[in-house]
Length: 279
Image 1 (spheres, rainbow, N blue to C red):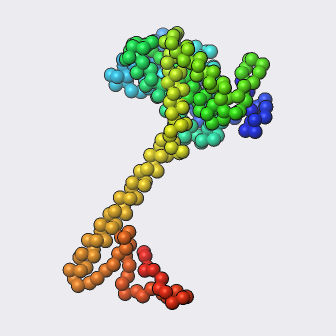
Image 2 (cartoon, rainbow, N blue to C red):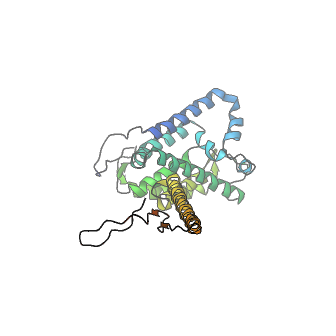
Image 3 (cartoon, one colour):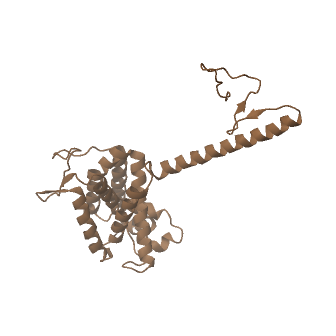
C-alpha cells in the first residue's frame, strides 16, 4: 500500500515511523511475542485482558483498552500494524503525538463500548464473547484519514490501481457493515470495526480543535480565571466597606483593581485627562 504526498502526486515512499506509531507498534508486537512464549496461558490471558462484555460490567474496566494489544495470529497483527503505520503516521504529523494517541484510544474504547452494547442487546454477539485486536483503533484512523485527506490517492496493494482515500473509506464502511452482520468471527469481532469507524468519525467531526484533553484544560483555566476575578471583585468591595467605616474613601474599578484617589491622572495633549491608573 503506497500513498501520495500532500500535493496529490504519486510517490513510492513510505511514511516515517513517528514516535506514537513506534510506541503502539512496539507494544503490540511485544505483547504478541510474549503471548507466543506463554503458550498454554493464552486462554487465561485472553479472558483477563481481552474484551469480555460480561466481565466489563463486573468491573474489568481495563479490558476496554487492553483488548487492543492482543491478536490471534500473525496475519491479524501484521495487517493491523501495517494500516496503522501507513495512515496513522500522517495523522500524527498533522496533530502531534499527544492528540493522536488520544484519538486512537478514543476509537479503541469507543469500539469496545459498541461491542458491549451490542452484546447486551443480543445483537450478533453475546456477553460472554471474547474480542481482541487493534482493529477498532485502526478503523478509526482510516476514517479520520479519509475525512481529512480525502483527495489523496492510495494504492490498494497488491491491486495495480490507485483510488482516492475518501472512496476507499466509503467502500470500507460498506464492507464493514456487511461483514458485521456475521457477528464475532474467529475471535475477531467485526462489530468493533464498526464502532471504531463511528467513534473515529465523531472525534474528527465534533471534538475540540485541541482534542478532549486540550479542550478540557482550556475550559478549566477559563473557569479558574473567572473564579479568581470574582474573588478579587468581592475582596475589593469588602475593603471599600471597611475603609468607609474609618472615614476613608478608596476606589476600585469593575475588575477589582485599585484606583488611587490621591493620584491625579496626567493630562493628554488636547487637555483631556487620561483614565485612572490600574494596578
